[in-house]
Length: 92
Image 1 (cartoon, rainbow, N blue to C red):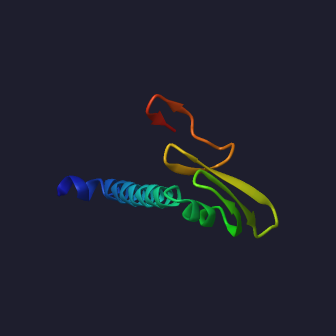
Image 2: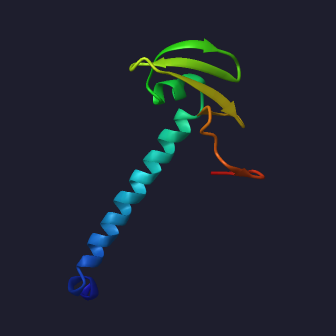
């Protein structure tokens, strides 16, 4: 305890690390839910209306009037043209 009394800044650093770890975990959970279904990903991307839908792809209209295409890749949903890069079973 005397060490922490003399080096109080360590507690601040630990608090920042804990807050950042919590934020990171929340972001991972949000993305996991967003990519889990077509409807979730459409909502995540801000779609105002779904215009077409098949089991592996779909399109929707954004509030701004633009249209985006959403595709399924390895059981998860992504914006067409924005698929992750994969090496074997590892994708980023």
